[in-house]
Each structure stands twice: as C-alpha cells, then as structure tokens.
Length: 216
Image (tube, rainbow, N blue to C red; front, side, top):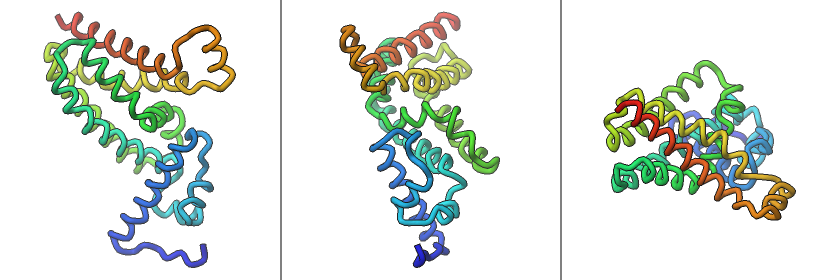
C-alpha cells in the first residue's frame, strides 16, 4: 500500500470511486453482504482501509451507493416492460415481481438497507442517499400511476414504498441454509426462489387491488 497516490483531480477521484464500487459489486455476487468486511473490500481493491475511507464514509456508504445505482438501472429496465403491460393489477404486479427476482444483488441490498446499511452513515451522506431514494421511488410511482390514475399520487407513492418493504421481508427466505432447503424439498415445497416470486407477486397485487378499491 506504500505506493498509494491520492487522487487529486476530479476524474481521478471518479475513477477511484468507480473501482471501489465495481469491486463491491463483484464481492456481493460471490457472498452475502453480511460476510463482506471493509477490510476485505479494501484488500480486493488494493488499497488500505483508511484510503477507501477517503472516498466513502464507511462500508455501508459504499453499498448504499451500489444500491442506488442498481435501483436506477432496474427502473431503466422496468419502465419499457411496464409500458407494454396491460392496466391490470395482477399483470403489473407480476412484471414488477419477475423483474426484481431477476436482480438478486438489488434484492440483497434492499433487504439490508434499513436494518444494516443506514445504521452507519453520516448525516451528510444520509441526505444524499435519501434524496436519491425519494427520486427513484417517485419514478416507480409515476410508472404505476400511468396504469392506475385512480389511486392518485399518494396511493402510487404508497405502492412504491411497499415494493421495498415486501422485498425486504421476503428476500431472506429466498436464501435458506442447506438444512432448511433440504427439509423444504422433503416436504415438497416450491423452491425458495419460486416462493419469493409468488409471495412478492401476491403481496404487490394485493396492494394494488386494495389501493384501487379504496380509491374507487
């Protein structure tokens, strides 16, 4: 680490931050978030832990930034899919659930956001992250409201928030231990990934049906 050179120009800072984020994504694809330490992340990047902290407040801030980028990319992917979907609660819920199931890294970070990642960040970074999160939630709400204008801005915002809450609740069950997975197979239960999609679809569909019914 002795040859570390601090990035001084804006483009150098951007490149160094991107290298850290790219490495964080690589590690998340290999193991659960709970098993990734800041020291391991630093070693993989090739920097001392103190040098990584020059660019991010904490390990949690690194992964919140990853979450924001994955969330934005997911919305980019989802938008044309929802545009083609019929304005039917089950159809829209199915599209959202299937799309999320195809983004396991995003689901992993959503499940850790409130209970882990937001617990070790500064006020300054919390402002940045929450501002970005609000922007993304508003974008999802607008997509859904185009299908169901009757639910209004408040209802669409509630639905966007419920997506995160339901994913956070269901995702841990989609990654059972080997022992639990074996017992579920012995009982003839659907696989955990299948249960995740089914549970998410049903939860989101029920949210939409309830919002539409109450608005009507």
